[in-house]
Length: 513
Image 1 (spheres, one colour):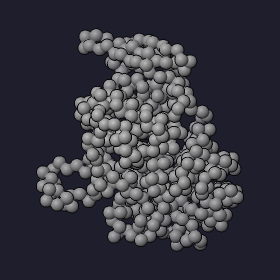
Image 2 (cartoon, rainbow, N blue to C red):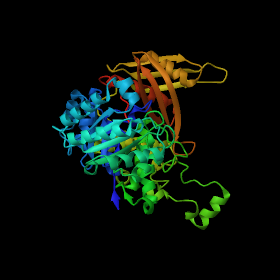
Image 3 (cartoon, helix red, strand yellow):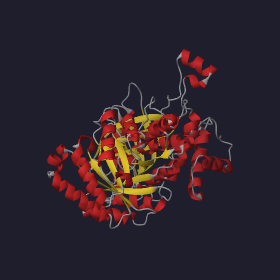
Image 4 (spheres, rainbow, N blue to C red):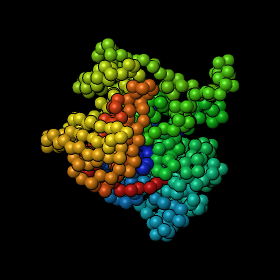
């Protein structure tokens, strides 16, 4: 079978989703999991965007060994230089350069003529080739570009040294037939195209990203780009897990291998969802919680007689075979460590000890500890930096009654070590907490969105709070978990504030395929 490369852009295009704000340790943890998943290439970020992005790309490039790490760059020398500084220590330095090629982008965004765009593309690729052995060039908005011009500029950048050509459906506009036809045209009309990789990058604005990606594969694509859970700007990118499983289940049709470790799909999906705070819709293909649920009586009858009647994908295929009761309050540290290793975690002794302490606290108050609980505890310790939080919750208490005004009292450790206590009222318990913390935290806070979800099942399930806010005018997302959702809410609020305080630099908004 032919094998295609998987280019994962969860950490770059995926992070551009509204409300997603990953710190460096979270990005590194996701990158490690993408490496375990088997991604050929991991796009770690945009080094020129901010000092934080630069640091994340550099650390991921120095950490990941079995996947190629790349960074995004505009077609300017400064971006290329910055990307080289970030990735010169990587196993296989790789750069991803982009430039728009559609008439609407060239005229209204770039304000350049087609000839000028060709010159800029060629010059940037030629310059990047001085440093990088692997240079990917993307024709932003390729699906709305003139085919003849597209073929012309691709010939030129291949001559300049590009090793991969990416043809994005940047705004999710193309139909499967149109997108496949574009790949066929380029394959048949560009001399030397057989010497480079031809990549597909689809957005899901019209709900056709998976179909478009498969159409590209049918017409010559040798690399596909996407994100875990389909996160990304607007309606998101193609969900890589959907394409990987589709190619596996229908391998007799496509004859394609991806190199993806399918049993790591569920864990990867769960990790990305937890760290980004982006909920997976229940009926999401492959990884949604209802993906293997059968409620119809006819379906249930068929499943009992032969699972193949209604189930083309098994939970075991994607690593979703769960052990409900994994540990209890009488479990020892050795059993806890063994379970952590089996779940794919690699914690040092200090972090393992902290995770075990948190596990014991939870086990004292929760009847059953399920795998979802452990996943949250272990992940939080895995990404936990040793630095002391800027603000740390000491306690929170809420007084509420249907005939009384909700009042919250909170005590928080300030960065200078001082314990500050405040109280405030609100229309509800949550607003009372927000108003109280607003009196403690230095800086202007505006809540944009807030939600609480359960981790696992049952009345004693952990609650996860996710808060989108603006702090000092900058958008940021905070999250935390606790058995009490009000405690989780207070922690999530402070988590968001802490993230923004420690964040350095200002991130440049970038839109590409």
